[in-house]
Length: 513
Ligand code: TNX
Image (cartoon, rainbow, N blue to C red):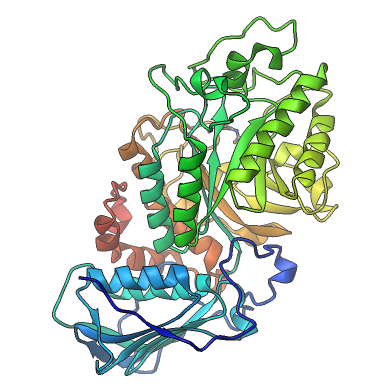
């Protein structure tokens, strides 16, 4: 059944579009809730706690409920494209249809309210349901909250608590990374992943598109990167790659879920798949020029001494890459390599990225180069000395391996998981115990899922969920709003939502799943 949507014509000139091009540095993000705002409160009558993840900034929940029937007067601001689609899907799934005569309205309105920032929203449920935000992204997050308050199966009426929520994320970077280099994951899987991320207000999907074992992105100027470099994967067997068109479509799909896709091509190390495709990318004394399907790291490098071929390659690849991805950011890797010319490589690559009017991200080791202050560094060793970069005001994405590496076990001894960073694995509670406040100059948190040991979608789901929900709460909710014992109760109750999305999550005993 097709829904009619009444398009409200009320527009505000200060309203922005989506979030993908907003400045994410905290200084420009002053609307982040202060600690004084950050306490959740419920009314004296103390209704049951709401099962929301991440925990909202402030809530006033009444004892009374609001019963809604199957027809609603739906009003949506004309420029709220992503949230309009999300709301239509939500109500269609519940059998609610639009009618101008309906006894209550569901309204999405763009408003001018600097306190809500680029992603915050307010949700008021009394005799109507009204979501207000400055942006489409904010409205979209209000809808995710509404979705978590509703059941996942059709009913004749729905009962909602009367409440007022005002909710603003702590960090602008709330991320998931998937290594599609070691093992290839299909676009269909990535789309499912994006929808799951959206439910928890995660907003950055970092794709690790190349590694020693596979090159996964079509580069028209170097077709062998995919025909040769994309042909296999860890353990051997068929690999795979994405065409530029597939990736463009995927970026658009992700944008409708308020997820920004950040591409990474890892250089100058982790590059054997490219070397196997174009041998001249290695120095002339290198004899290992074939495809690689093992799990070792740190053995391959672009040639940094005969630099003409190398830098032409870097520029060509980044030029095509940045044309596909609308993100302001491009991740150039830069991890696990020892070479005296490494700092120079990072600096030159930084200049190439700047020349393409993009902003560079590198793994923490890239701090060895004199990179521009707008660059971001991704910290992955908990105690890596990143001071040389923070002294230059370079901001950080936090991915400390002993809390966020989802290729480590959900429990101590889980088969097919890594233990090199934390021998006991990284259970949900461990993830949740991470305190980003221990670091300065933070744009947010991202959990990488490396895939040397993750060979199927079911295994990927098992490694990603439920732990990504903890990452979502760490990056959205302030410390004063986080408590593990409450988090598990809230998350436990969201099981039907994950079931509806077909997630093959790990059945974490603490969640009683
Ligand atoms: C370290 S973290 C790596 C990856 C591996 C991972 C396995 C980082 C920048 N490099 O290449 O896949 O460990 O846990």
